[in-house]
Length: 359
Image (cartoon, rainbow, N blue to C red; front, top):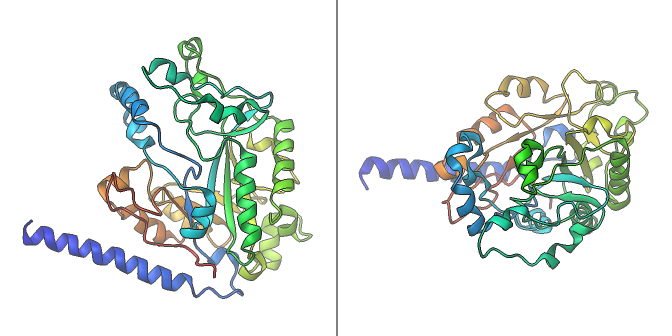
C-alpha cells in the first residue's frame, strides 16, 4: 500500500471515529424539555428481514442481466437481528415492517421459487403461522421470504414487551408499509407459474389493522393524543407546539405508508406519511437525502422526516459515507440504515451514529 492509500485509509478511519464520538456524545445531551422534532434517531430498514439462502441467490443471479440496474439480486443480501436486540444492543429507535394482507390465511405459505431450485427444501412446518388469517410480514413473497417475524402481530408483541420493560426509552417510530403488489401482479406468466398476487388493503382490512395496533401496543402514542383538542395535526404544532421529549418518552409512534394507506381510518391510532401540504400530516418520507435536501431543510420544523443513509447494500459495498453526510446535513430526524452493525461478508461499513441514547 502506498503512502497516498495509507493517508486515505487513515482519513476515513478518523472521519468515522469522529462521527461516532461526536454524535454519541451529542445524542446524550438531549434535555426532556426539547420539542420532539429536535431529536434524531437511528432506524433500521426492513427491520424483520433475513437474507435469502445461497441457493436462492445463485438461482436469481442467473437472471440478473434482464432484471435492470435497479433490481440487481445483490441488493437483497442483508439481514437484521430481532427487534428487541436492535432496540437494546444497537439503540435503534425506528423500525420498518412490510405487511401483506392475508384475510383467509395460507396465501403466502408456499414459497414458489423453491419449486425451481434443485435440492432446496425448507421445513414448511416452520412457516405454519402463514396458514392463519392475518397480516403477514414478507419482503418479496415467493422469493425473499425469510424473516424474523411471520406476522405483524408477532413483531408488535415483541416491540410492545420491550417498550413496556424500558419505560424511559426515547420514542420509537414504526413504519408500516402496506404492500399492494407481488410478483403475481407483474405478469400473467408468473401467475401461471404459481406466483401469488397481493390482496389490496381495503377499509375493512385497515380497520382490523388499527385494532391490532391499539390492542397490542400498550405504549402507542395515538393521533388523538397528539391533536390535544385541535382540529388538525398541524394546528396542534401551530398553536401548542410539538410535545416535548419528556412527554413522549416510553412511547411508540406508528406511521402508515404504501398501497391503500388512504383507507386507514381517519381517527385511527396511527399516523400517516403524506405531503407537506396536508394539514393532517406531520411525518414525511424522503428516502433520498440528495434529491430531497431542500424539502427536508424547509419542513423539519413542522414535520418529522425519515430518510436513508444507505440503500440496496450499495454504499456498504463501496464504503461510501456521502449519503450519511447528506442525511445528517439536512436535519432529518429519522435516519434509516441496514448497517447499524457491519456485515463481515461485505466489509467494515457501519453507520457511526447511535441515535438517541435513552438511558
